[in-house]
Amino acid sequence: MTAPIAESAALPRPTRLSEVKGWFFTADQLMFDWFLAHQQEESEPGDLLELGAYMGKSAIFLGARLRAGERFTVCDLFDSPAEDASNSKEMKKSYATLTRRAFEANYRAFHEELPTIVQGLSSVVTDHVDEGSVRFAHIDASHLYEHVHGDILAVRSLLTAHGVVVMDDYRAEHCPGVAAATWQAVANEGLRPICITGTKFYGTWGDPEPLQKALLEWIAARGDIWHEVQFVNDAPLIRLSAKGAREPAQPASRHRSAGASVPQPAQSPAASAARPGPRPHLPTRSAVRRVALDVLPPIVTRALVKARKRARGH
Image (cartoon, rainbow, N blue to C red; front, side, top):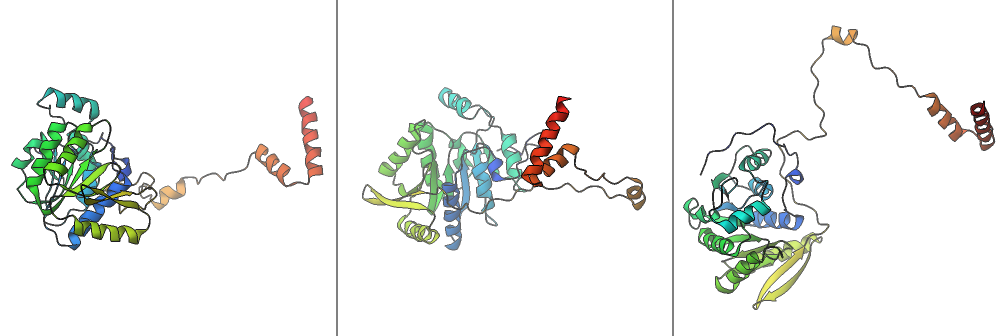
């Protein structure tokens, strides 16, 4: 674990979550928000964990749902070199612009304090997070099967009995290794699906039935989320889509909005009196002519147009 990097004035200062680079769609914002709120209603203890942060979009969202006394840990390679050639190649291809400095600047735009940052391979996270201490974990660190499989096993040991794990890119065609690792965990590692969106898989090693029942009741009450229930290996799985649905509450930026007015320095009465006021805006001759042509009767308008044409001819 390394110390925070000094913030740079040259880095962008996002005023809205939508300005932070990354892929975190409405359906998953709604699911993150619902699961975390439900855990709070049920007084579910535990911390938050994210493996793979990119520019911090989902981390910022998670940080806004962090409760007092909880710990939020983010693990990512950031600028560190990967230890194997295949992982290094994937890092260069997918995350060429990723830096820890950019992540910290984005996160600090919304939160005063940074999360606990572990800079390194996600395989080291178990050295920094206590077993059975995490209630919600988001895995998005690698697209390679062997790494994702290891991340799933690590998170299983870190989750509480009723903890929830989220797998990103579980069905994307460019990273079949994630799909293989996810469904292998369902078939062989005891992971039980709760629901899926177009981009993320939500599961638990606890009992998914109470979560699914509460989730279906919430979806029905909202009325703006499409869903269906399918069965995978004789177990229910909620599939949902949130096109056109209302977004959950967004984290508030600490920076002034781009359209906000900047206060001007106070002027002394003498200086205000000495400075001439703004000149009144007077319409130009062409503008007056346009207005006249618009409001005069058609017969008069035609006469004016003919007169102007004759004047130009001379």
